Length: 418
Image (cartoon, rainbow, N blue to C red; front, side, top):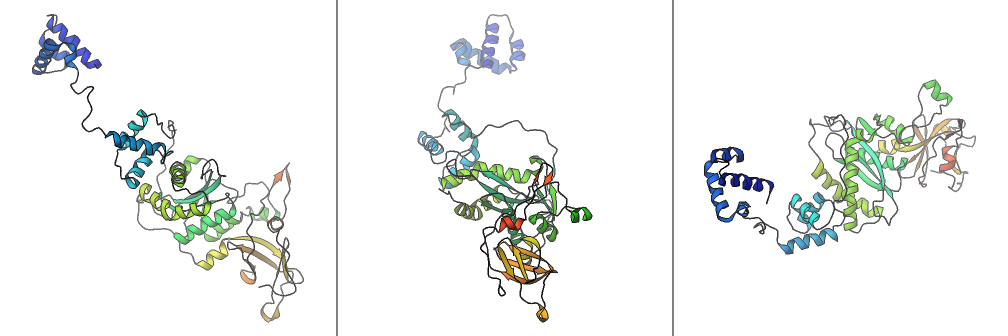
């Protein structure tokens, strides 16, 4: 019997012994006189046990069939192991045609000893930041390093960019590490799919902003440090950077990674995907569109601030840049790579001229003089440039090209190499 039923039995006992009137009992139990008479009749006939609810101990008429319960438990423990309750409800409905409510499933799993995927912790207090009013105003991007293919496989990085106005991912893919090449690919995906946004919000990764304290003479005169390669591309595209100093400020992208670590890992295991190439196909074709459908929301205002870009603009801008001086034999040397510059207009030479060598995302090279292309070189492997290193207050830096191209074989410099 419940505590309320025991209290009713106590009051009815006092009424039967004459120590409490029926009017006083109605006030004490908050019942009408008619209800009190009905309970008194049951109490006199069968005692206090008659006050217990009649359905107690009986099987509910809407209880799930035992065969269905066993089937769900078997799927939850084997095929869908590692899925959270809400995700499991969706998978059972979409893939197994088993409709069950989330609370019903939760109660079923807990009774069977299947605990929650993770414990919930009390949220911290943070001030709310309203989403951007229009798409393209702010894009949040980052990389999440994790063992995405299970504990038996090495970790890799999920790169993603999410529009702050509607919470929908623009681009997402797996890469072996969070490098400048990965951010160039991420930026290329955003430009191709939507365009150039007004601002990007990130955690201040070294591929995006300078994190060292060294200032060259030219930088001191300009009162500004030269950004890394990706930062220079953002400046050239007119995309402003906003650096975040806490994960709570990057709520859209952090929630995306949180959901991915919860759901995507389970789905990759379900489909037997253990390679980056296969996972990227699954992301583009299934998971990202499904995420946008389930968790996206309409922006506050219609319209878009994305600016369209051309293929030629993307190829030129998304590149690694190295400043060089042309040798007397009209060659540009980058490590062991030597690029011959053909004669210019009226057989003009470029000896002693300051040029910029750019390696594009496809690995090809272009030499620019005063922003005009004057030479090209076929594809060579992409490698991460060495960044500034400060140790013991002394600058110790090697030329990025010496590290980038140390393994490239020397090329023939007797004639133009275009």
